[in-house]
Amino acid sequence: MQEARNEQQPNPFLLRERLTSPLTWHYVAFTVLLVLVTGLSIRFGLDWKATNGSSSDALVARQFELKALDLQTAPLRGLDKRVADSRAKMKAFNDKRIPPNYSSIDRRIGELGSVQACASPGCSTHKASPAPISQRFPWTRASPAAIRRSCAL
Image (cartoon, rainbow, N blue to C red):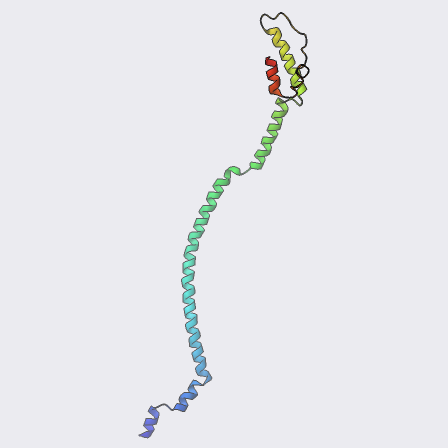
């Protein structure tokens, strides 16, 4: 009977040997690592699901924003060519309409004044060639507005 009793109660030396055995510690370490890896993989899966769902929404939002910016910048495409073309047209207009110096303006106004003096009704006196405005009014050099005012006098 005592032998049966000894088999039922664990031997304290046997339990101690099992706890200090390297195989037991390997089982314990494996179990701890298995629980740790399982917990981290669950956490990783939840994070992946959360970021993957919002990233597709963010991607769609970014695509809409890009399309809106593309539509806003559409009028500016080719602007450098249009600016160069406008500058060339302005230069051609200025060369055609504005004489290179004011003496030609002065001469042309003198010619128009003599023609107008002869063409007006009741004109009895006529000067053959009026003096240029810059000689008649020396303070009015190069101002087209002043030339027009002096011609009106």
